[in-house]
Amino acid sequence: MKSKSISILIVFVLLFSVNAIAQDDETHLIEDFEGEASLAQAAQNPIASMISLPLQNNTNFGFGEFDRTQNVLNIQPVIPFRISPNWNLITRTIIPVITQPDFSSETGSNTGLSDINFSAFFSPSKASKFIWGVGPAIIFPTATSDNLGSGKWSAGPTVVGLTMQGSWVIGLLVSNVWSFAGNSDRDDVNFFFSQYFINYNMNHGWYLTSAPIITGNWMAEPGNQWIVPFGGGPGKIFRLGKQPMNINVQAFYNVVKPDFGPDWQFRFALTFLFPK
Image (cartoon, rainbow, N blue to C red; front, top):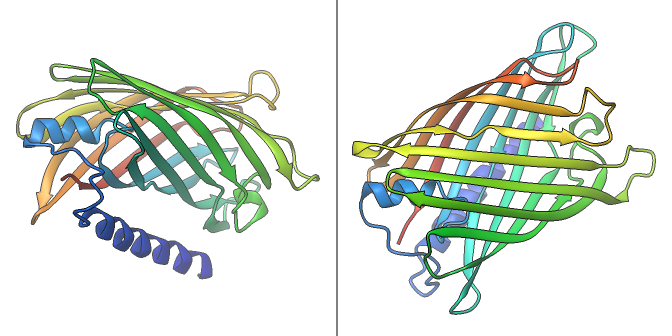
């Protein structure tokens, strides 16, 4: 109950702070996006110069011999900073709230905060056909329970690149982190993360998207290192009053997974957009 209250408080604090930043006329952080098409492309660009607050819920089905279900709510504020006339710094923080089942039985679970993942992308501010960003990724051992996190401080490089061609937005985000400090009794971390994203934008804010998350645990035994999903779904840009929103649903089947890993995943994402 305590961890659930903490996660709810985090959501309200982030909503308040992001909205306050978005209304500050002196920040000059965001470009002026006009029309649904431009707003959709900005929402699909992970390093767009636009403040956003994605709430992404991933439900993983079929864990272990008892086919348990895991739920991961990622609170992901994205805040850009113009650090010079030619460069932006895009910060992206992932705050995961996990409901982790007891994999050794058919009942029982634990809910709490997992390890926070912070990334910062240095990206050219001038528009071009190919958009890119590079910077550090840092994982903080903030988990409220041992089975919800690694117990390690980890860091490594992260890079993203994408292109916008007509109705298409296509790109790739990659990172790898290694542990460098933390609980000496816990296993070391050497973790690979990759997400390609393919979006096709249609009329009236509708779009089709595929953005699976491919992960590799280099410390696991061969044959149990990779999770490779395949799938996608629809999405739409809309307004709730004057507030621009982005919503999408996706389903993924894990074509490669560890012996103990989930069979498939359902994702629901709702994003608050703050264009200017």
